[in-house]
Image (tube, rainbow, N blue to C red):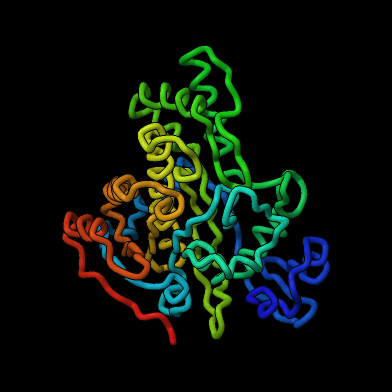
Amino acid sequence: MWFAELTGFKEQGAAQIRQLLQLEGDYLRSKVNGVSYKVGSLITPSLAELHTRAAAVLKQPQQPLSHLQLREVVANAQALHADPKNAGALFQVASQFNLLEMVSPTITPDSGITNYQFDKTQGPACAMACGAGLIYRNYFVPVQGELGQTAERQLDMLEDFSDALLSHIKTSTGRNDQPLWLMKNGYALPNQQQLLLINQVLTTCSSAELAQLRGRIKIGLQLDTQVTLKGCFHAVSQAYCSAMPVAYSQHSKALWQPLATLVLQAAYEATLAAAVVNAAATGNKTLYLTLLGGGAFGNPTKWIIQAISAALEQYKHSGLTVNIVSYGASKPEVQALLNDYHAVPTNKIADPA
């Protein structure tokens, strides 16, 4: 079990974890095996904040503007994390809106993180690749004045966006309906009436109003966090983002589209902006993107590619090297996007033996 291999003991609950693991600055030390791992720092900036920071970086005279480079990489995300050449790179990671990796809305943070290893999707694989950061987000992150996430107390990257959207709905319609969705262990689950109300407002917003709403969405950035895979000692940064769980309801994709596409666009814009800031801090301009919200979440690939394309256009002069990670095989939709950008050929990276 990955947790026991890292810490020297089996995971048996929050009280035990906090007794046997000690947070020392940005390091997590096990009192059992004496090993320390670098957690780095966790911040949860909004898209608007990241745009402001990225703009400041790009205005600096020592930051000559150059065109963004784009390619597809067919690889296992853990293999990419393990590559020391990626020290300082930024990896986008698919998570829930609580920055954790619940396999379903019924799983709480109290269920622990050891079982992530049985989820064969790439989000949990990335989270476990930087195990100290994962332990921190589940057991040590401050939430509502206390340490750690529980069934009743969790991070919520949509909280400010929800407040802004509610305010907009009240102004536009006079209605004060709340909440706009059930947030259940990081999954945002609106019912049909809630989605209809959201769509009524989103479809009548101006471009500027939509940009303001998108700007309130947050992502989680685990910065300068150690890769804890066997034989690794370097650090990377990770951008934890979520999408709307389209497949976890009976709602049509058409009903989901206005909200789901807005959330996707915010996630990719925020990640590109974070990569600009990260490049200035680390000197590494490499960014790895995932197809956020695809697979089990049911967001159509077309929506995802459109969101990526819009974010790339916004930061096309950032000088970043952007890699879209495809797991298992190259994806035609990604290839079509690459062709539009005259990108370099797909690079296939073998899994480590």
